[in-house]
Image (cartoon, rainbow, N blue to C red; front, side, top):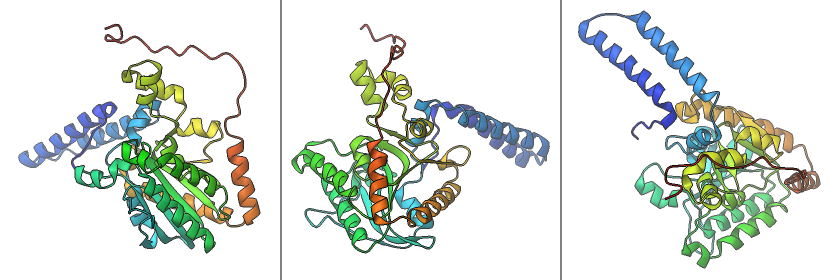
Length: 334
């Protein structure tokens, strides 16, 4: 895939181009300039560090959607040993936007289930741009029930803008499929860990997200609605997505503070897309640690912990909210 630069990464691109130009000039002229190259490399590293240490919520949404970011199959290939993919919901078809199967993470046998996006037009069409159909959620539930039958922990990877919103989803009852998954995941007496690896969009994410531990990568997001959708509803203009992203409290630190996520998985400097191997190592190590802890709990303790975790979400205090008025745009009054 061709390189892709986010809007706020333009200073990095300029420095990278300068470094490449210097190296090309040195080769052509037979001149060795290690000090100049080292200075630019240091400046590039410092600029990247400064940028990624102060990302706005909207910029983090951009990183979470980066087309080179590792997806579910990438993590499976990186650290799930002896993965045996299982297909179909036994009712209609095999939804490729949901991947699932048995494998090993470290010394733990697990059932891995995750949403999958594509890298190009063909693969995106095959997996419906990461938006599961109802049969995808029914496949996920079939695999989770299979795992519970044989006392196997469940690991889910969440990376979806949401469930498929088209007429086919309504005809095949996508809301019912997600609702059944929510109910049944509270009843499974095995450890469940959900990892938000990119986008965590609405009920489409929650359909495989009821877990004892919710982990989130540093630059991922988890939200009831996309920033663009929120802006379109509140301000009738999707251009206010950056303001909506800040208001939604969808970043990893916000989710920890709200008691929704349990742990932030650090990403390599520059995001998971800059070093997929290092990102996979961080995810693997965090999963092994949490699996070891949860396997010490009894089935009753797992069920109670999961129920109490979600029961505590949404607790709030009454008070005045600050005004939520976005800056005017030129076309707001047109």
